[in-house]
Image (tube, rainbow, N blue to C red):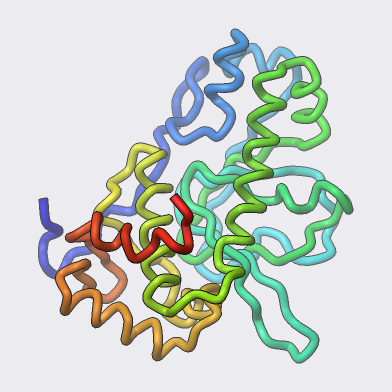
Length: 249
């Protein structure tokens, strides 16, 4: 079904669950439930899951160099991570959607190696990492999930390291967003580009004008429909074919 002209797709948000059920997008629910642990069981083990927020657009969740004590799963909104280079220019590292975890890259040095900022209204679930690590030592499934999330985080960082054309980079970005939303039960074809064109271009290592031009060409070719930040994928197979060289699948 096509999006209603002039209206943005509804922003995805996790179901909060209840005393026994995890939130609908929880990054750890499957691993815990497969081992027989529900939310009440985790509470008994003093593994507290704390809902925090809202963070307003532009508000920082953590800053580079701050002490690392917790990881957080996004419940609603989009989080951007970035660093500042030696010349004071921002370098965008990634965007995190509902159900995805921020802070994993801080584990080694016990300090956050980047900044995290809300791109819209953001809600988070915060997990004490020392307690999560202790629980993971008792739950092989949870330990495997942590390793998988770490691997995903590394994969996102390496996604655009190759020498790819602007069309391929932009298509890969849109297809990746589509897959990530779909995995968490949201629409794979209609979603908001909550990041600005400048942020998207920065992440893709392209000029903002180039990204805008590519999106216009995709729209003219019938691949997508774009209205401000609302995007609808109209021809996923063709977009996927453009992205395949970058995504390698």
